[in-house]
Length: 387
Image (tube, rainbow, N blue to C red; front, side, top):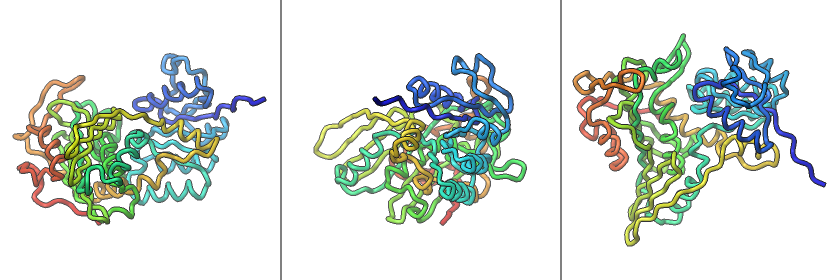
């Protein structure tokens, strides 16, 4: 007679803000009998209303002590970027497998320290790029490899979001490249629209660090911040394929971010938050398909319990981390002159809107060009190049 598996004890570090989505997902997996929320690590404990019926987990601001007292098998980390490496290694030392929120680290050196540390400890680490759990990603890769759109000529991604000035005050590290001497590298490409970068690289078949030949960046900001809010990047793979991403948090109107895979005989457009794919190719009518998605925490649980392969191990984000490193080492973002942006009312504070940016973001994905190449007069005349 078979018995149900014992739910794995989970500790969540960072349960407010974006961390609440992890809290709700843990509750969903609890209801399936797969996990048990054993602990919450927060500077200020969650109250009953915030826990919202999820039980009475142990709470502490001491992450290491919480791991020890709960015997956690899995740690979910949704903490400030600059804490990721040390907290992951703390979990690894306690034998806990990790779901680590993106970006995995603020520098390539910290990423390597984290990845090498979890490998040495013999624990698994899943990086929280939810879009890479979409079944559309391997499906598009198969279409490209099968020649459905001819020869791959490039991949372009576009992300145009609206964020008001309060967004850049949501946490002490928000809008910073560095804080108290430590790298943070918050910015449009590396944090809120990091999924666009990681997904574009994955669709180009470029996921490992060694798949990247060079990275060109144009980093700018309209808001009064240290980091970038309107930027673009071109990654050139070792095979010569260009991958561009244009991103802004100063859009005229918020749109669904997407990735376009360009071929010699067609294109594939992927709206990665919706798992929606549009295939357009010569001699065929357009075909639109919606795909399923594998939850990354659920996949980590399956990996720990039955050995299922991880969807997003650290090695699968090496190319993305090359982009983070290029952004980190590039000159500080250039300020977009006041004459090229305007202020409008936002949801909770004023917001800055860059004139014409929505069309520029779309043009970048369509033409695989950077802002300066599209005629944006506020873009730098010389882009930073990292190899």
